[in-house]
Figure 1 (tube, one colour):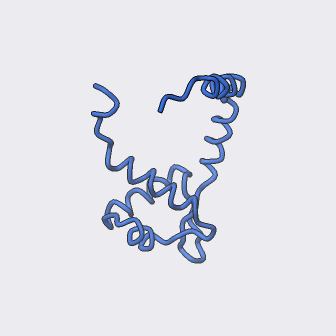
Figure 2 (cartoon, rainbow, N blue to C red):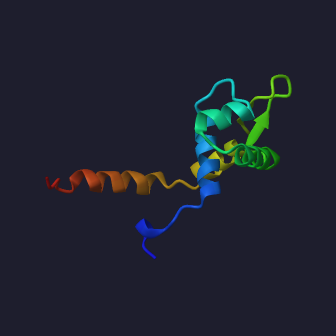
Figure 3 (tube, one colour):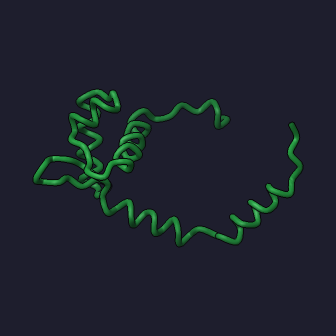
Length: 103
């Protein structure tokens, strides 16, 4: 199946959208704020938030009930950086710059 014809998994799309949304916040958001701002169903929002918190991707401020990104994302980022081949990235970038631009 070609890449363009694949259907995304709605729950994963929602979870990733939620993570990106919270990544732009300094103080986090409550479940109801997340639901309202992203236009997600209440039950989906609750289940996604609870799952991400349980797995360490979100953390809840017990004082105000707001969620923000969790420490698990730092660990994933560290692994991504450790596995990043900078030489390959730079070489690819240079090759792209050298290739002719066709209008």
